Length: 267
Length: 261
Ligand code: HEM
Ligand code: FES
Image 1 (tube, each protein chain N blue to C red):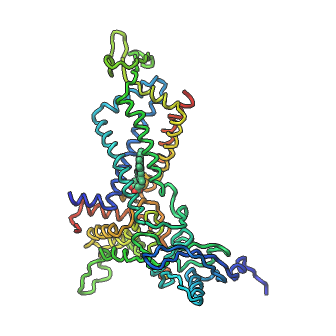
Image 2 (image 1 turned 135 degrees about the horizontal axis):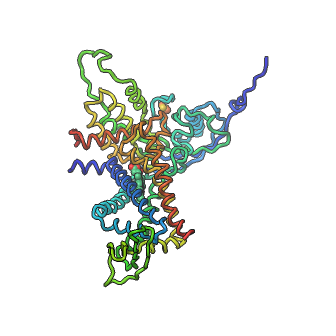
Image 3 (image 1 turned 180 degrees about the horizontal axis):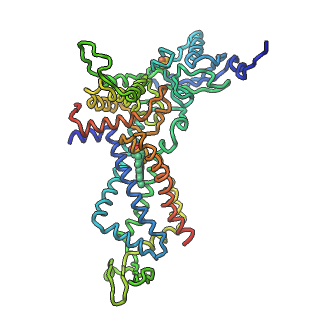
C-alpha cells in the first residue's frame, strides 16, 4: 500500500492555538470593552461558532460568564449568527455566514478580533448579540402580500417569465442577518430593504401593495435610524447570500415611481 | 407639495438631490473645459477673453450659472447632512475595519474628496470669478485683420474707470475687427506661474478624478438607472471620461503655463 501524503494532512490534523480579542458588554447601557482570551487546542475543522463554544465551556468551568452570541440553525439559512471578525462581517470569506466559517480559514497563533454588528439601529443586547428587531419592523411595515382565499387556482394560471422568477428568487434568498448594515460604512439597510421590496415587486402576487410597500418600508427604514447608501458596494460583497446592489437601484426606481407617478400614499 | 417635501426629506429623496446636483456639476465641467481649452491657443488670450465675456453676459448662460452656484451649495449642504446622519447611524465604530476588502477607496471617501473640491472652488472663484467681476483689470485690445484673421494686433490698456468698457466693432476704414475686453487671460497667466497655485490645482484635479471615478456611476445607481444594457457604458464614461480624461485636461492648463510659458 502506497503512502499518500496530502500536503494539507499535517496542517489539518494539527490543532491550533489562537488569541481572541472579544467585545464584552454586560447590557445595552454598559460601556463595554475588549477582553482577551486564549483559545487552545482548536481543531481546524471546527466552525467559528464551535470554537466559541469551546472557549465558553472553559469559561463556564471557571465560573465565568460565557460570551453571548447569536446563532440558531448553524447551517447558513436562518440568519441568526453574526459577528464582525477581523474587520469583516461574517469573517474573511465571501458568501458565507459565520456558522459556516471554519477555523482552517485562520492560521495557528493568529489574534482574532471579534466585535458585534455596529449600528444605532442594532443596539447591543449583550456582548456580541445585537437586537435586530428593526428589520422585523421594516418587514412588518410592508413586506407582505394580500392573499385571496377561495378555490385553489391552477398552477399555471399566472405565468411568470423565468428570468423574472429567478431574479425574485435571488432577492428572496436574503436571510436578514444584517451583514449589509454591519459592513456598510454608513450603517445603511438599503440592501436588506431593497431585497425585500424587490422579491415582491417582481412577482404578480406582490402588485396590490407594490407602491405602498416601498414607501412604507423606506419610511420605516428611515425611522429606525439606518444610514444612507453611498453605493460603496460593501453590502453585496459581504452578503452571505450575494444579494446584488441592483436591488437598491430597483428600490430607488420603485420609490421614485411611487412618489412621483402613483396615487398610493402612506400617512 | 407636502408629498414632495416628505419625498425629498426621506433618505432616498436626499440621495436624489445629491445625484442630480452632482450630475449637473458634471455637465458644467464639460462646458467649462471646452472654454478653458482656449487657453492653449497662442493668441494673447483673444479667444479666451471673448469666451469669458460671453459666459458672464449672455442671459441663458447667466441663468444656468446661477443654477450652478445653487447646485454647488445644495450638493455640499446635502453632503454634510447625509454624512452627519451616517455618522449618527453608527455611534460606536469598529476597532478593526477592513474596508479595502469589500469596497473601493474612492467610494468610502467621497466626503473628504468633496471637501477638497469645495475648498478649491472657493479659492478658484475668488481668484477668477471675483477678480473678473469686481477688480479693476487691465483691458486687452485686439485688432483682427478682416482679410487675414491670423493677423492680430494686441495692445494692453491699463484700467481707467472713466473711459474703458467692453467694446466689439468692425472698423471698415482700417480693415480690422476690434475687440476690447477685460484681460482675464493675463490674470490666469500670472496665477499659473505661482507654484503653490499650480500645486493646489493639480491636487484638486486628482481629488476631482477620484470623486467622479465613483460619483458618476454612483449617481446613475441612485437614480435607479441600472440596466445591463447600458451600465457598462455609464461605467466607461465615468471612469475614463470623468475619472481620467477631464481631470487630466484641466490639470494640463496650469502645468502648461508653468512649464512652457
Ligand atoms: C465639481 C464639483 C463636483 C462634482 C462634479 C460632483 C459630483 C458628484 C456626483 C456625480 C456624485 C454622485 C451622487 C450619487 O452618488 O448619487 C457626488 C457625490 C458626492 N459628493 Fe460631489 N461633486 C462635486 C463637488 C462636491 C463637493 C464640493 C462636495 C462636498 C463639500 C461633494 C461631496 C460629495 C459627497 C459626500 C458625495 C457622496 C454622496 C452620496 O453618494 O450619497 N461633492 N458628487
Ligand atoms: S446560525 Fe443560522 S445562518 Fe448562521
